Amino acid sequence: MTLTQQIITIGLCILGTMTTHFLPFIIFSENRKTPEFIQYIGKYLPSAVFGMLIIYCLRNVDVLHGTHGLPEAVSILITTLLHIWKRNMFLSIAAGTISYMLLLHFL
Image 1: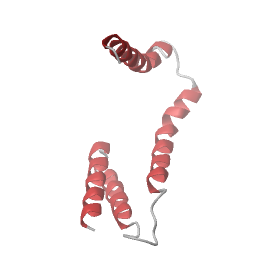
Image 2: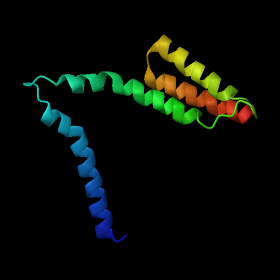
Image 3: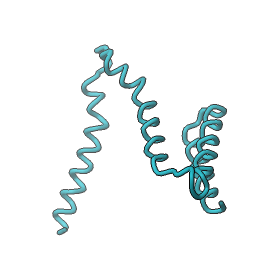
């Protein structure tokens, strides 16, 4: 890519990112009530996304070979218990990821 193409690409990425960040504030101003459908999506979509991520991450786990899914199960348990206890998503995900990587390395 030439320098001009790189600058245009970066500019378009910035424009796309800024649009997705500011568009909801423009569409749903303080003066108007947020539609029920949007409130419903905001309430249930995060849980659905995490459910799909769990299914995606566990799709190749073979409980009949290797470590029998032990690193995955322990990491999910650590993530879940830590999140229930501390209610801190960053801490929960970081601890689960670190425990998974350590279990993979040492098991």
